[in-house]
Length: 184
Image 1 (cartoon, rainbow, N blue to C red):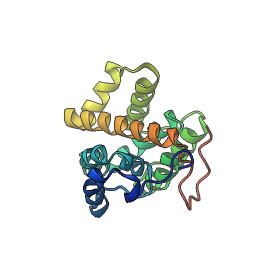
Image 2 (cartoon, helix red, strand yellow):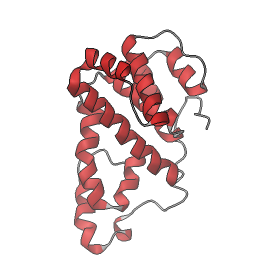
Image 3 (tube, rainbow, N blue to C red):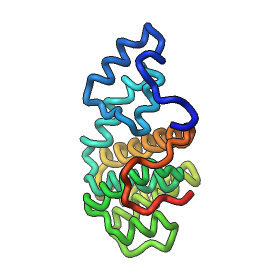
């Protein structure tokens, strides 16, 4: 974190150290990534962890679609950390190399499933117009149902928030990435 120092227990107000200790002791996903920025506000981080855990790891949205949504959000927000943290995970989950490379390089997209196209269209709608077309909603509903639509929407919103934090503090790239960088 180039713009702010990494948070430590000693840098937190004394009355918040018990919360800081609690979030560090748990399995809540706060390590060294963008979620770690939230530890500067321990109470906020404590409240964010359950939502993060659900949308990231437990959602009813299939894993390849979750990873694609994280990538499209990272691309839309030009967030190199999230992109490079999730690109290998997306490949391992089954998102095609051609689709990932086209998203990264802002090239024409290859053929893809109807649901993958809807996720990309949803991302473009969200981040460029702040609305989602009925056509996109209908496709997502037909594949994921209302619960999946809401969870996908929340996942993209949560990752946009993480991207805002990562970019605000100039988080940069994760360590040990073998992937080509996301050019912003």
